Length: 226
Image (tube, rainbow, N blue to C red; front, side, top):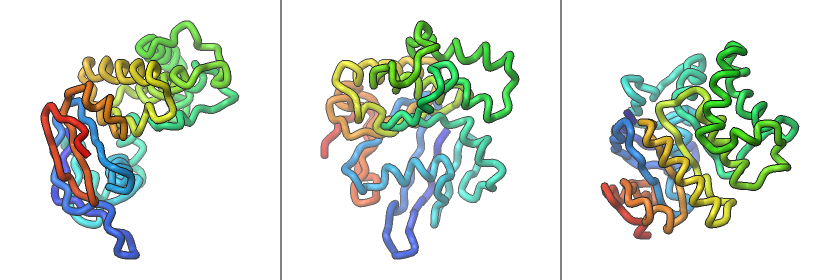
């Protein structure tokens, strides 16, 4: 599903963001990526969604080599990879339904399909009864659920959650992690980037540890050891 072969990212001032990464993530895995700030986690995400290009090495998503992906192909790539951020990134003047539907609208999807898909994903994240509410009427956990629903509308093969619980309390954190686990049970590959030691140790899933721009640990049922 995701393969990195000798991937490095070096910026123009010789700052090394990633150094010689080799990584293979199978379809349907749930993988936590951990490490302190500045270890290269964010750069890795940017490479996977083609926001950045590797200086050296090869990146494959499925059978697709995205190392030198053309700009016209990037929208198709990003429909296969749903992104969930820490700060929700919701449109304040749109309802839960409208925020979720917007990702399909900008992709030119037919109205009939939007009316079918949006209720389905809102049901998955537990927001089917709050479709007409605006972001300011929602808790932080509910706003993050909208963000997850929006990431799901294209039925991506991969979900990348970048510190999705960073702004949430422990109860909402648990609920968001449970939703990610549920999505993973449907067969979607989930990459969870987090600083939260408790989440990682409770999950007991594969853990990739990054330090000094390199992968320094890869455990099948790992813990956050740094």
